[in-house]
Image (tube, rainbow, N blue to C red; front, side, top):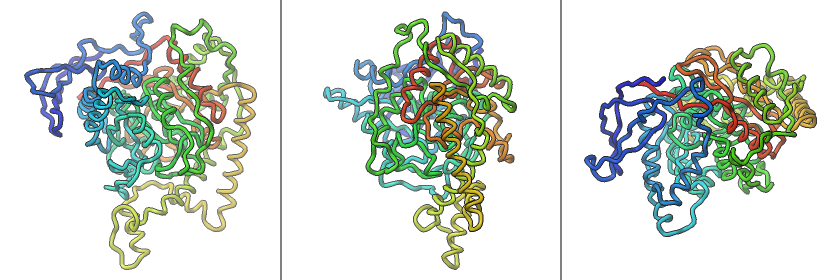
Length: 558
């Protein structure tokens, strides 16, 4: 149960960067409502909490269940109906962002143009002009995606203060769809990490328990969505960097097929594995975001020219679903992901999810993938090798701060020592690519990758979709694994194979594990055939809309 506590209320005047602190009695961070106060002056808004504390999963009765809703659709519809303006929506999110940021630390930069963009959108609405599918929706963008009007550092000091001269293709598509970009989210340096503790600037906290990690490397985006600081966010996924944070933070995370979304403007970590994806409050939101950013791009030769389908057309309201809406769909749970090493709470949540799928008419059986465990070592050879090559461009000459050196090589070395954090992966990749070791490591890892791809192909001929836990555990404590990289790497066991195979995967919350004040979220991973994102979105939507339990927004305390 939420406890009444005293904490600051932040009041913001439109057009002013300053905040005034007022102390008041407030409840938890869910159910935020905006109240206009005439005595605060024109354009002022004060944030209060709802007087009704939110329920935890264990407390939700079926009759009082709050099913996931499309926040994106609700915002757009409110603009179209003139119930709210884009400025009002943006202000509300910015106030909440600023209020919670000292606790969550999910943003590295907050846009100075968000309100200006919202005002421009309001003018379009007033003139009766057409608006895009993301009109007025406040979104966060992971800091490794280039934005022309905000710093893009990749979470690294070697790019501190860098403003790209262009937008990443995915970012440009968000803007053209009417989205309001509220800021850049925190991440592990260049995507190399699983907890966001690898950021050069700050450690992001999990909104469900501020002493725990949000996952990584897209932990800032996941935490921002979970905390209600933005309506959705972009992330990138090289080996699970969208799916693991989505599971840890109790939000929906979508990793598209390799080539479905352009990588132009995405700072490369491992080019053959990197994918731009998204976070949302519901599967519908994730589908809307994917449809906005997917599609061919002349600037990215690896981006597929395949047509982008209407991902939302089959995501029907729960009242329009039959009693067995998943009848005929065959799910296969990967045997190797429910073996030793997975904690009991996670297994229990996944087993309950399987039972729920069966109650919806689906058939579920175990599917063996005998080479599944080979994926993790192969992934780390390939990813670190590509990282070693991609990150060689950061040398103090073309980007970032330059350190003094008596000669060119010493200047390179000093600049990289100054700018890069203690991540070991560059060294690992350089070693794997060095003379005499290429065949023993990199070439063999590529051969393993082919085997993994064939295993997925065989499995998806037996069943329609594959499912698994996302991680062996729920979110762990900040600092718990920072000095044990091997333990952190093992946490990627269930996600890296999907990147090696280039397949799409969706994570939906499915239960709670013990921990924190109200439990820790556990996610279910659904994997489908390449370029068939709709095949996982529809079952994911039905699953979340019919789940007997509901997830409350996390409670943030001072």
